[in-house]
Image 1: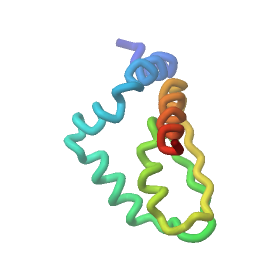
Image 2 (image 1 turned 135 degrees about the vertical axis):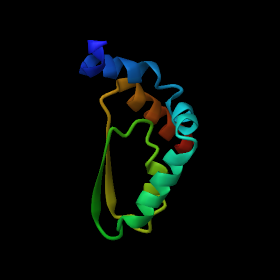
Image 3 (image 1 turned 120 degrees about the horizontal axis):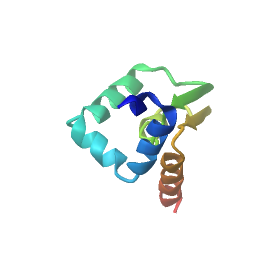
Image 4 (image 1 turned 45 degrees about the vertical axis):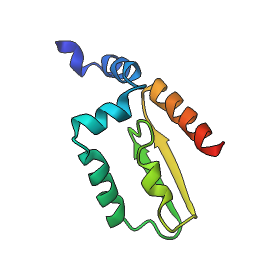
Length: 98
């Protein structure tokens, strides 16, 4: 049980569940994860030139709301320590582009 505070354990855990993360997050939060994200981004002023840093960005769930802001002059930096989460995010972005 001491492993739960080990960063490698947590990284491996998120790598392992990366393919189902979005779905499981939606279910386990009863949809509130989407609601609080939308409400949060509605309250943040992202107009004008901004740099947005999304820590523990997971599968990039925040991108949907960031892209809806009026400002196109923003830099978005996504960081996550799960390599598979980032890989799945890149696949998701490729699907959106095509």
